[in-house]
Length: 134
Ligand code: T46
Image (tube, rainbow, N blue to C red):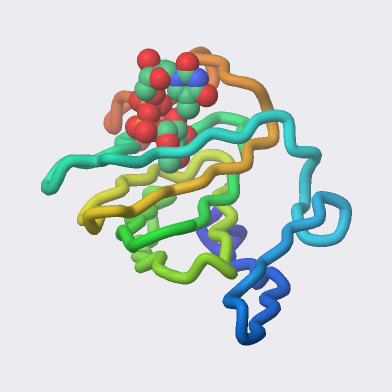
């Protein structure tokens, strides 16, 4: 699936004197049924996550706190997102290689996924991934 099918999704953000509230409604804001939610936190300085692509899985990544970079490639095009806004989610579609890096201290990456965990859905070898997409 080409990189152009990835996108940033804006969620409703309500701000008043008590602070901010963001809500996500599956049926209204997420283009798949959410089957799994997980989060990454306490990522040590300099550590990277990702380093793989998924065959079928669709996911939305949100920087609930702090910031991190998401580097994506479909084998033809590369794009980088700097996620730092809790009211935005990055939709990553199948067959897109992702590298997550430069996590700020206190950062939390919340992920909503279209499927439960399945190791067979991963391409963890970059050369193998490239052979499939080119
Ligand atoms: C992605 C980034 C943002 C599970 O058992 N269940 C799960 O739901 C997940 C996500 C992982 N695991 C196990 C599999 C591995 O033994 O946890 C270990 C680390 O998983 P992984 O190498 O996939 O972790 P990340 O942080 O590099 O990548 C994950 C997602 O896999 C990936 O799709 O976009 O978070």
